[in-house]
Length: 468
Image (cartoon, rainbow, N blue to C red; front, side, top):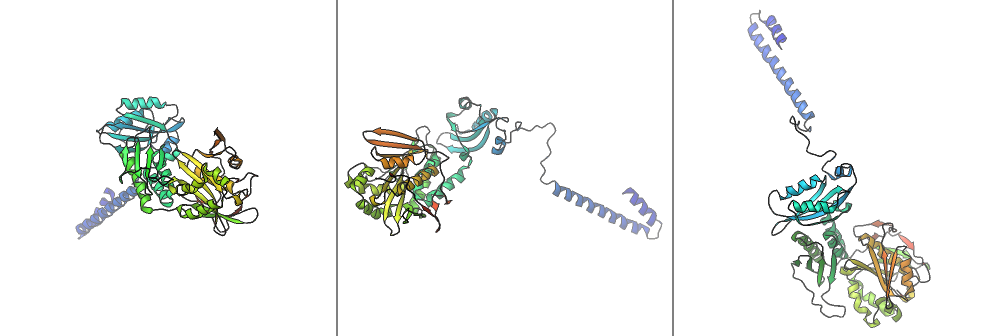
């Protein structure tokens, strides 16, 4: 800049009007320099706008070596210094005071554990903090809970979690609400997935004999530590029990919201159907059934022999119709119906929610037995149970019912047998390697049949579908 000024002084200083020209040239040169400098700073700012701020001299990264503070980093070894990790779900109650949560986090950091999610459940006194943790596999849970208790946590509870728990709570609740909206039979399953390991009973207001049971609950429901009672929109009470861990008011509010959603939507069942072809060429339709099929189910009862009804209901044949209203209710499970081309109902298969267990039951009209219908229904019910996350299914029958025994064996699953006074209980333990259904699977777990989606039902043996 100095050389330019000297040159201009020499050029213009000796002319008559040189002083004015010199001043104008100096102003022009300064303006050009300022514009160039501003353009350079603007370019540099755009280029480095996303760069992290420079560290202060002597500052250190607070993150432990290899830790990233995220679930992905924990997979890479961040939560355990590169070793094997496991997922834990932990709850503890702390005082509602500044620093109480920080004390817990210091303990967790000391063990090199990643906090993947954190929920808080406010109580009248204190707060329940629920963590999803990725911890070193070598860390004993007792050691962690002991240190948490020492840091101010009380009533600490911890159990192993799995990758499904990595879904954040709002997403999981919205998914469960969607499933409940599509299928009324999903409500008990949605409550179980929302609240964890618990036992759910649907207690009807009227028994199968038509007598009042006295089961009721206020509209707002009742919360009693480890038990919540919610009014069933279809009548009666939904009872949820979790003895190992008290429910929080937040959990109670979420469960009540799901039940209210079910009540507002009213009775509903997916109407998807599959068309199958029997060995002799007849076509049948397999679909979901509900209480709208009550009249057709009673007509099927009238066509069944006393022996067939006796093997199915294990009691007086005259009482068989009384059970249908209960069995066809989506609240107690899922029902599959087999319908002929003329619209006649010839078989029913039930998947019944029994607390924390699941029962399967079949009834095939006499004239339609030994055609593969029983095995087809049983296989579909087992797949529905697997999709619902059930660990096992059981069937209650009589020891002389060789047809049901053969159908259970044909599943190819591990079976347990218990016999007492002629009653046989067969339990099938479900496995993740069981055959998956073909066709598109939707949110409700039902197969969506296409016009060309037809299969041939083949009997698996002489006992197929017999007396069930």
